Image (cartoon, rainbow, N blue to C red; front, side, top):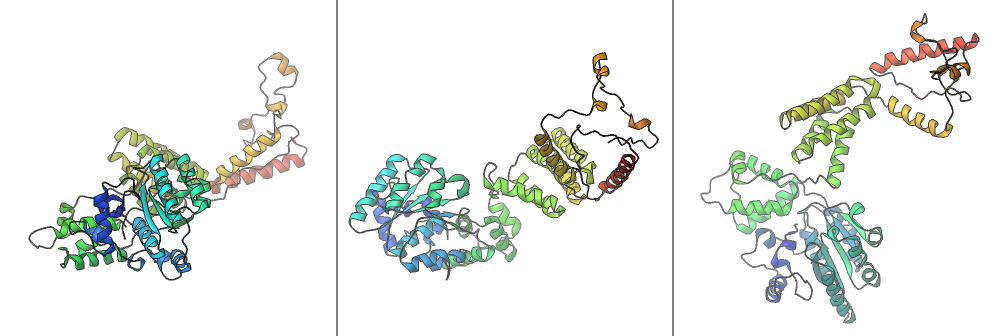
Amino acid sequence: MNDAASASPAASADVADDGWAPSAYLSSMTDLFEAAGVHPPDAPLADRLRPRSLDEVVGQDHLLGGGGPIRRMIEAGRLGSMILWGPPGTGKTTIARLLAQAAGYQFQQISAVFSGVADLKKAFETARGRRAAGQSTLLFVDEIHRFNRAQQDGFLPFVEEGIVTLVGATTENPSFELNGALLSRSQVFVLKRLDDEALDQLLRRAEAQEEKSLPLTPEARHALLALADGDGRYLLTMSEVLFGLAGGEQLDVQALAGTLQKRAPAYDKSREEHYNLISALHKSVRGSDPDAALYWLARMLNGGEDPLYLARRIVRMAVEDIGEADPLSLLVANAAKDTYDFLGSPEGELALAQAVVHLATAPKSVGVYEAYKAASKAARETGSLMPPANIRNAPTKLMKDLGYGKGYQYDPDTPEGFSGANYFPDGMERRVFYKPKGEGHEAKVRERLDRWAAMRAGMKGEGGDE
């Protein structure tokens, strides 16, 4: 249900198990409460509502329901090392505790935020002692991505030897943050952001626990779910504030907003979410969906993204996905960047929105993009071939005597404004790199290119320039 255990003293095991526990006395008292299936009366609501079995965990049926991979692992009677990857408040810590309980393993928890090498050594020594006594250990490592590469490597021999079954929790993409060797020894399970149905189920449990309803209108209740943004722990924390309000009046949406501080969007400008959202923005523009593009632009700006980073990406979209289909797009994109430079936030953000709408509604072509890639490949393959003599620069008498510039035709002076001369290196066959699609402005460009190609072929047939 939630990860409140990672931040709550009531979630700690004994000091021998958790080096970061505040005291042995508090931990042992916590164990007594948990063994009895109850929690201290002054514990936070999220802690008091922690599920007592995997069946009570909400929102993760794809893993824990019938046929789910973690459910099958439990039914087989043996846990394997795993990484639980998901947003905050989706149940990573709770699931790890319940896995240990269901499999009969001793639960041992450390946090990568508070633990170092000495804590890891102590944890492994404790687990080795348990193993000698015939007891298996589930070592839960919260925020495992915060351990550096060397510390992550330190887990490998103990995992391979079976001293511990490792369950790591992370909010970051394991592909980027965890060692390949550690990933190869673990299964990665993705926890889903809690949807409105799962969040509402938590609210009903909270109301049953408190024996009263939340003082909210139906609209405000829906707004509360939206404010939680998929985080069950945060939802219950806000609910606890609402349960504590005196007076019994029902709050509408406006009153709810005044009571609860607005939550900052879950967005990290330097990690995977950043790349996911800019990819969504770029693909929405490429897919000619201005509404989706505006949504992702707003998500990134609201999350604190640098507007000039977005401006640079918008310029890239103009040259990569639109090109000659609408040459104005590049001017609009650069003008949006200059406008933001001039106005700043928030007024300048409207220029970025205008550019995004223009690009999303513009005709698309990768003609120039593909042509440049093909030309670059040909340039690498042909090495240092010289231009044909007729188009070489001839600033000296010697160069003119060698034939530099001889026979050059100045195209604007020809009757058709087109000479059909060869501009490729001698010894290199003519290549076609740019192939316009015929969308937007490129339709006229293609007509001209087709006409010039026909003229060039005619001149060649008449013995013109090869």
